[in-house]
Image 1 (cartoon, rainbow, N blue to C red):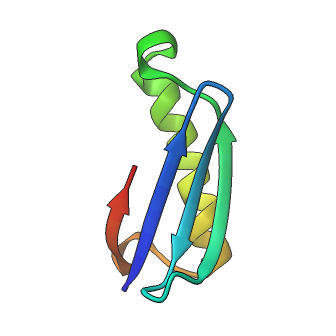
Image 2 (image 1 turned 90 degrees about the vertical axis):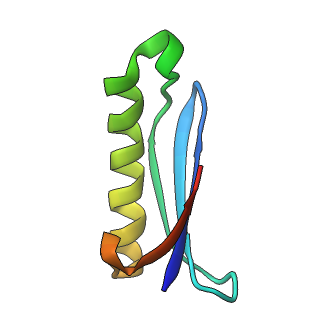
Length: 70
């Protein structure tokens, strides 16, 4: 199983997929988005973009994830 980390701020969103040893397998990037200022739909769309890119780069699917940290 694999781990997904998400960092979202006002200028960018980053998602990283790593294995249990901490090796980074995939990275993804999205637009910035703050749910308070930009609204939840924009913030979640940026997360979705970043996560899809990270998973694709890692060659994984959502069901392969063990944990998500945001």
